[in-house]
Length: 295
Image 1 (tube, rainbow, N blue to C red):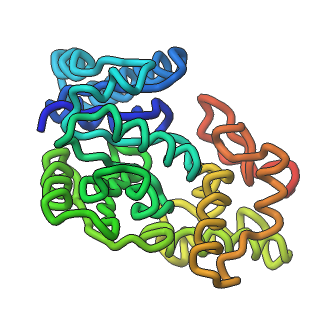
Image 2: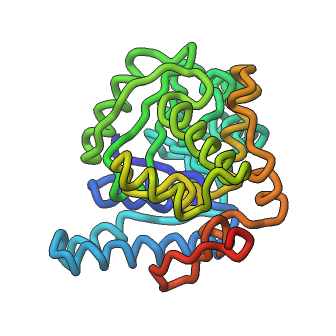
């Protein structure tokens, strides 16, 4: 397995392309927007430069890694030679189903179709294809080049051979794969998102302010980042989307998104990506300033 296609050149997509290319795989990074592909390559280059400064790789390693990445704005041609396709598009069910239908039609018969979804049913996605036994979840953590975990999610029809191949492939990337079954939120987000939601509820109800909530979890629970800062980093829109999947899929009111979270997303306050969420995020600054709405 040497030819990898990655669909989506956003934060997760460019990170996935980076780790595959750095591990010696040939990668085709696919996005409908040429500008997104250019930004992705620039991000990968900057991340490789950081590794050079830390003396973890050489300039030659960087050039070799970038040389293994090609780009495409057309899904059909981008996946035509792939042994594995990893979809890392926006976390919307309708979009992913359409992408998988197109992937299934264009990819070679033996190609494994993986999704980086953080919560959407693998079984539902697989049902949109004629090869459900070759569909699997490959949920990388953000930032992909740094985080070791890959959640490998078996759909109802995923074959043992597909699961075994993806587990071994993840190890070849230097990752630690963990196999889980296909239920809403899988493991990571089924546990993480209710915690983030509860932190937002705690803020919404006036129990404590932003800094206090994050400080309690960092110093009291040894979390490297508080839940509100983490929510900003993930993206409040992503958190809301996952909570809605949990709420709908499991039918338990404890997963209902906090109204404050809904309002913030509606207002476009999405965290790091928009420049403001629970904190103000200024490009190039590491200062952690509480957003004006919560001062």
